[in-house]
Length: 236
Image (cartoon, one colour):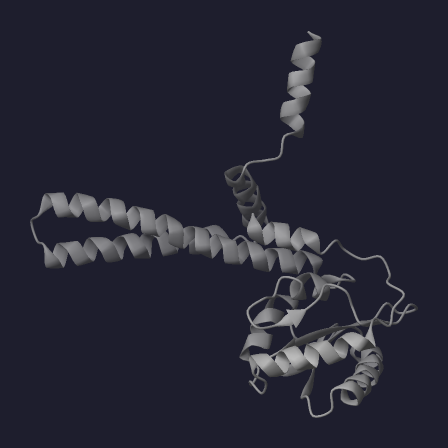
C-alpha cells in the first residue's frame, strides 16, 4: 500500500512531457483567445486544400497520388496549425503579463538574432517602479521604458546621457511600453526592434556592448514577474 502511494506521488511530481505541455498551453490559449482555434483550423484546411488541389490538377484521376497528397497535406496542415497556435500562445502569454513589473524584461530576455539584451532593467525608480531596459543591436542602443510615460521619460533621458558618455556616436532610441495609447504593445516589442533602421554592424555592436558594461545597473530591483516563465512558455 505504501509502495502504491509512493508510486502515485512520483507520477504526480514527474514533469510533463513536451506534448502534454504543448497541449496545456494550447488549451489555455484557446480559453483566452477564442479565435485561436478558428485560425488554426483554417490554416490546416488551407494547406490540406492546397495539396488536394495541386494533385487533382496535376494528376487527374490518379487515386494513389490523391491519397499520398491527402496524407502529406494533413501532416503539413498540422504543422501549420501548430505554428499558428504557437504564435497565438505567445501573444496570449504577453497579454497576461502586460502591465506587470518585469514584463519588458521577460520579452527582451528571449530576443536573440543580433540583439544583446537582458531581463534585468538598467534603471528603476523604487517609488513608482518605472523601469528602463537596454537592448543593443543593429539599430544601435534602444532604451525601453516600462511604466508611466511621463515619469519614465526622465529615466530614459538620464540613461541616454550615460550611453552618450561611454559610447559617443552610438545611435540611441527610445521605446515606450507604457500605459498610454501611443505606446508599443508588449506583444509587438520584439517585432518593433527587428523593424528598426539598421545603423550598426556586428563588430560595432560588440564594441558598444562592451563599453556599456561599465555602466552597471542603477537599481534597487523591485519584485516582479518571473521572466523565466516566458522562456518556458515559448519552448513548450
